[in-house]
Length: 397
Image 1 (tube, rainbow, N blue to C red):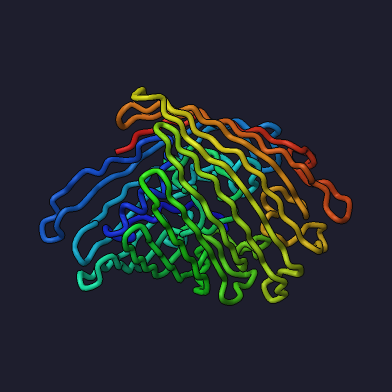
Image 2 (image 1 turned 135 degrees about the vertical axis):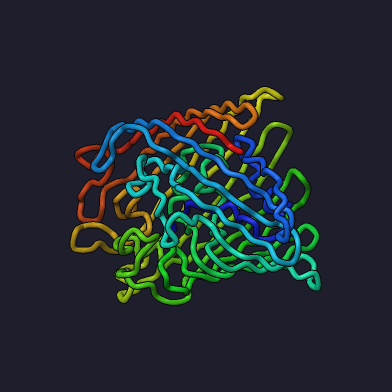
């Protein structure tokens, strides 16, 4: 599951407090909506942002080159009150970078990431007054999996964890939310991974103990088979990502806030059973654990975010090319891969302007497949570690 994730954008005004709690570890203040009189549509909110970055990767491997790129250029229009609501978000996206991820590398920002082209999110929401706390939405919607967002200014760092890398992203479907007291529950059914095959069920349950402690548990299941010739995110057939698309997942993250400090531990387990029809010839598992955090320096414009992670995957067989069919294949490229990593991101923000430096390192604890072939980083594809650094700046409104 490859998230560009996931703000849980506008699943309804009644769930707004829960959704804000999910993104408590933002290293920056997000866009501040401009209020617009929409006439017969009522009050509307316009917001967005644009940012770019330069990047450096060492060692540089196949398909990776140092340079600069646009991260995001997004504009969002929302109606968040009344019985009929909507969200439209248009623009390019791709600024969230996973260190070591061969498919999420610097320089791949696109305005046509999804089948819907420049429409990053677009859905209509019903909030019936007869059922307080309930909303239902349909359209191009965000995934419920994991903590991090594909819009990197929502995250502690522009660099994202391996947990984020294997999660779902925007897709077409229907989602329903019910919130009562400290509990909020959301269920989504759609074409996970933007494949056009509607067989993916996701769920998220949040419990707010108080303003400083929020627990979130999420899950995902493929209810059928998505064949290897399906298209993922409009960018070609799923190929070796077949185990992503046909997997089941369960995970949880906990947001703890104490003054200027916010910590978010997250754990995640993913499983794809043997399914020859889907091109998965051996059952595979992925496990990841991470600790994300942000600290703001009083009322100054400075803060620092980052994370540390451990990630491993296992499979019982390899294919004819010597690679496994598990969900970790694009990340470290080795059966039974195991890695640790970290990222740190000092940030400056003055009102709507921000600048952030990001540095991360991934080190493979195990990178040899069952045939004795080494997989890893660098031009020879066998390196154990890779360093990624970016310098980003942007404008939010």
